[in-house]
Image (cartoon, rainbow, N blue to C red; front, side, top):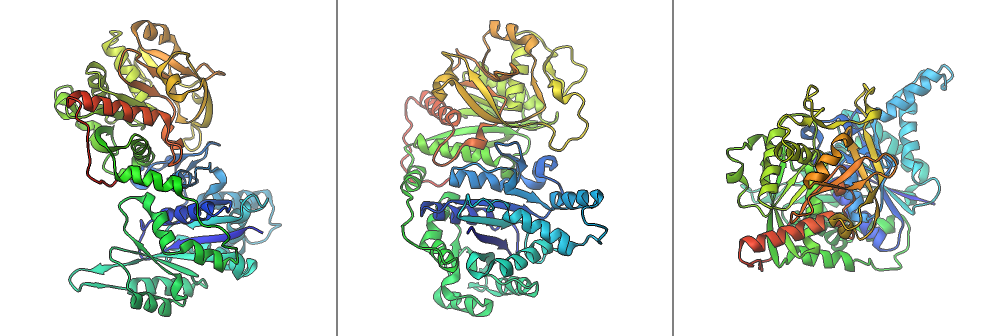
Length: 549
C-alpha cells in the first residue's frame, strides 16, 4: 500500500516547505523507496500560467505541458525524475471540477458544499498518484500556512485522510519558524506553539515538527517544543539555514528526518541512503577551481524566483565545470545603446532571459548586439532567442524596423510571427505551445556536438516563432537554423558558427537541468564563459577559496 506524507507550514510563508519535501524525498529515494512529490496550492487561479512573476516567481512547465508552481522544479532537480500535471493542483482546479460536475447534474440535486464535495475532490486528487502502486511513498506539500482561510479545506481533507488511512499510512510534517531575538539573545518557541495550536484546533496534529532556525536548537529547547506540541522529542528536527539548498538533504539526514518518517510509517530501514553522486556535486560546488561572471539580462531581476530554473541550471553547470558562476542581474530597461558597453564590459558571458511583452525589449537587443560584436558568449532562451533574431535582422540584414509581432503588430519585417495555431486563440491560460516537443539538430553544428546526438526533446512555453520566410536571408548572412521541429519545420535553435558561443533556443532548457544531469547547453555555456574569462585575464582563472552558491 502506498504511504502518504503531508508537509504543512506555519508562522510565515517562504520557510522552504518545497525544499524540505524535496530533501526528504531525496533521502527516501536514496534508500530505495519509489517516491514522488505533489504540490497543492490554495489560490483560486487554475494554474500559475497567468500569474505575474513578481507575484509568484517563475511558472514551471512539465513534460506533459502543465504550467505549474516553481516547487515542481525543485522536485525534479532533486529527484531527477519527471513530474506531470497530476503533481500540481490548485483550489481553482478543484472548484472548477466540482462546479462542472454540479452543472452536469452529477450530485443528483444535492446542495454542493465545501464538506464533503470540495474535500472529497481534494482527497481524490491526493490519492491519485498512489492509485496504481507505482510509488511507495507520495509526499504532498500544502501551500500557504496553517490558519489561512484558503488553507482550511486542505487541512480538513488531510484530517479525514489520516483517519481513513490510519496512523501507519499517513503522517504530517509541520515546518515552522523558531525566531532568534538578537536583543534578548534567545530562540523563541511561542510562534511554533501557536502554529501547532491553530492546526490542532482544526483537528490535525503534526507527527514531526521541522524547525527553521538561524541558530542551533539546544536539547532543552527541543524538549520544550516536543512537550508543548505533543510530539516525541526525536520528532523535533532542526533545519538550520544552509549555504545552498543542495546541502539540505544532508542536514535532514543528520537530523534523521528520513528515519523518524519511516518509523512512523512502519517501513523498514534496510539500507543506508546512497548519496555519493550528490556529495560529489556538493564538493565541486563548494571548492571550484575557477570563477566566471554571467550577466543575466531580464525584466524581473528584482525577484530571484522569477528566473529560478535558470539560476539553478547555472549552478549545476558550474559544478560540473568546477567553476563558481557569479550571476550579475542587469535590468534590461536600464540598458541603452549609449551605456551598454560600460554596463556589460566586465562580464564573461551574457544570458538573455525569457519573458513576455514589450517592456525592456530594447535593452535586451542592445545586450545581444554587444555580445555578438564583441564575441562574448551569448545564450538566448525563448524571447532571448527571438530578440537575437531581431537584432541580427536589424544590424546585419539591414532591416532597421524588423521586430516581433508580439511587440509591434504593424512591422513590415516580422522576423518573429505568431504561430498559426495561436492566431484565433482569445483565452490566455494554458493555450500556448506547452510541454515537450521533438527537435532535430543539424549535423556538424555546435549544438549537435554539445548534445552528442541528433534527435532531442525539449520543453516549450511560447506563442510566437521564427518566421521561415526570412530563413534563407538569415542563413546566407551567417546565422544558421541548427535545430528544427521535424513535423512543423519550426526553428528551435539558431547559432552563429563563427562566434565562440552564440546560441539561441526557442525552448526552455533550464526546465530539464538537474543535479545528476546538468543540461548540456548550460554546461557548454559555462565552459565558454571560462574560456572568455581566461582570454580577458591572460589565462588566470584560478579561484581557490571555498565558496557558496
